[in-house]
Image (spheres, rainbow, N blue to C red):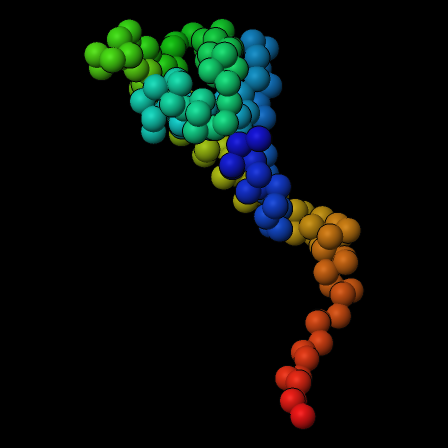
Amino acid sequence: MSRDVTRHLTSRAPRVSLRLDFAAGRLGPGKIALLEAIGREGSLAGAARALDMSYKRAWDLVGELDTLFVEPVVISTPGRNTGGGTALTAFGARVVALYRAAERRATAAADAAMQELAAATRLSARAAARPAPARRSPRRRA
């Protein structure tokens, strides 16, 4: 499981997770995180390592993105030891930007409902019902 997913699952604030379903395929947080990691790392292998993902899984996700869009989102140059790597295309960077903008808008639109739902969750109800821990007074030695 990636560090971002683990952090999300352990945080207390509700969060919108956006998945867009198109006729040709899906675009969601995992593929966007992979594109962002490719942009940071400059290689598919480095991006896969950063996301605790197998190289094959990363390769398959890039293939799905190539099938989804009419333009490539990444470009690879051969030569692992001679300056090769994988980089986002301008279109790939635009896909990330558009996805993040849609995610921000969805989060803003859902904020009030998310807060109300969060207050009704078991974890929230238990925390509200739990009394504050009593403070112990220091023991005196005789």
